[in-house]
Structure formats: C-alpha cells, structure tokens
Length: 65
Image 1 (cartoon, rainbow, N blue to C red):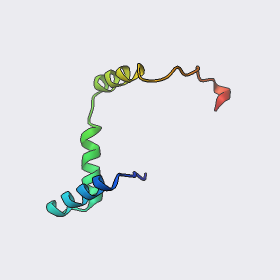
Image 2: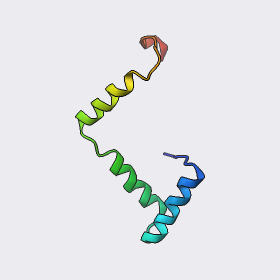
Image 3: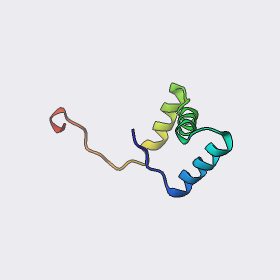
Image 4: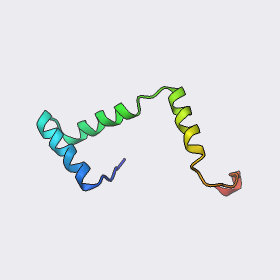
C-alpha cells in the first residue's frame, strides 16, 4: 500500500525516525497500529457519527459493480 503524506507530515516523521534511530517505515507502522487499535464498539460509534455527514447515496445493487 502507498500512502501519500503532505510534505510537513513526512518531514516530521523523518525527524522522529532519526531521533529514535528507526526508519520511517517502522514509525508509520507504529502510528498505524496506534490509530487502528479500536474495538468493534468504537468502530461502530465512529461509523454512526459519520453517517450524518454522508450525502444521500442511492442503494447499491449487485448489477452496479
């Protein structure tokens, strides 16, 4: 997977990696694990909160794929 980051974020990650003596990939993996360490209830709550922000989308049909 490729993740595009704004230049300032990439720079901060590179600085953090240098300070910790790690490569950037390791830092990104650790950050990813930290923000995805949610239980099912937290995921459901987040999804429910975002529903109101989505525009009206027509129902998906198998033929639309």
